[in-house]
Image 1: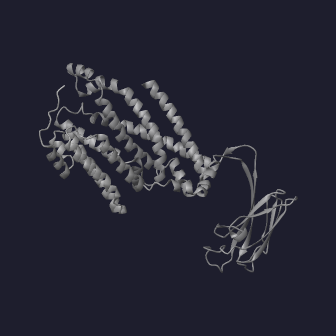
Image 2: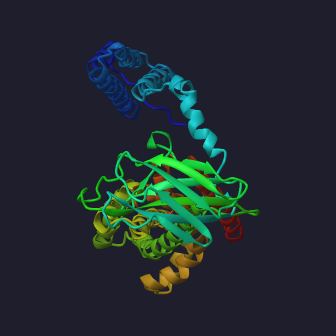
Image 3: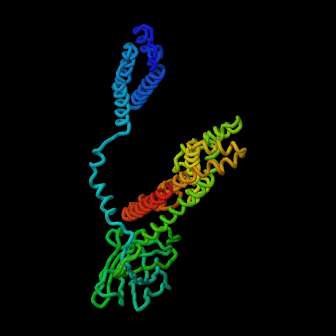
Length: 465
């Protein structure tokens, strides 16, 4: 073993140089890599401390770069160098400490607002993917607001349900009496107002809730209410008589189980998500395969032109891959509008960049023996790829493609949050509307799909590899 020649410089000189510029003494001591590492370690930790000082005016974190600077001087002074783990402790202590405060870690906020947590979690324990079938009976009667000399009688019969409203016309603040026969006996009935443009108005206490009246044993009910103060808002000229309606509704729960209305949206969203992931993976693979060959160093080092193509392709792949799918989704939504097509383009673009990089690395790692043997026969570039490279790369290519499809299923969910379609589009709407039962249904569906995709992709990879 050849020993590294020891530095003949003075320890005091090395320490002095490291006092001026961290790591310079180590460079003089013939340890350039150590010196460069120390310089960047001190520089980055000082930058962390300075940034946090500017944002919070806390000066205490400068103790860590100061300690690291002192350690650097001592390391340059002694011949064998100081223990490197001490410098690592100083650097990590500052990085994690500043990061802890900069990110505002507060576990009290996580567990403190239990009422808010219960308001979210409790509905999520009762997902509404399934529901009981119902049978709804509805009828209505028209009447005039405001009154005119020719106001028609507010009397109507529909499917053996007879409704009579008295008086037959009125205005804001007037009291009305609705009598109905022919309904289901001993059953709650919803009563609400619909103005001339179809706006629904509640008739319950304070006009903030539904008026519910129970029928008697004969299926008859009598409801009394006042005209809501907002009944004429946005209906046009208030002096012109218009026809309004009073609706009555009875909803009966039937035996059995069906998919709820939210459940149907979940199924539709999951279908769109899977389709988006499948198409994005297929399109991405088609474009990524040729790009992967152009981005492989061992195939593109023949001359200056191919090297230039290699560096250009690699740079483009790194740039595209560094931008998250969510950002690409926002860009495509702005360009072409909301919908699954925008999400499909975003995932496809990111898939091309990701698979192109992975494919090129697989190609760079193949056995060069078959390639050299085929080249010795005078084969051209395309023949080398066909007979020397493809047989080696097809199994890992297939495994990576399946794995990328698994990733794209998750990405299809996230891209919907910015309008890219799929289950994510419905999910963000339910979150905004605080419909946590529907949110829970979507979570369960997404979880099941991801589990199934993971299982089947694992089985396929096992068969291939």
